[in-house]
Length: 119
Image (cartoon, rainbow, N blue to C red; front, side, top):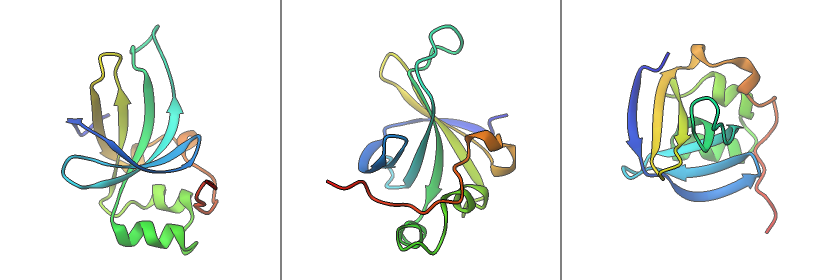
């Protein structure tokens, strides 16, 4: 299912909720990560699995201004692909990129607006 896999180092930028956070990779690309599953020692062995939406600063601003809902953003990514962000027990992180139309709908958020968590 994955088109390509790459090692990643994801640094936190912002947290919107317990299930949604904004990160930046080493190359400066922003990703909106939606929590899907966590620790799975019996299956794949990962610590955390998140659906990663690559997005530009402009697209992030449209989400934050309420001009775009989360479900639409994930269904219609700018680059035509999403990634599964995987955190492994040894500290490694990887991004497994796949076409947006191969994402299971149960992983997608509803048509809700992005709101920052109050400090």
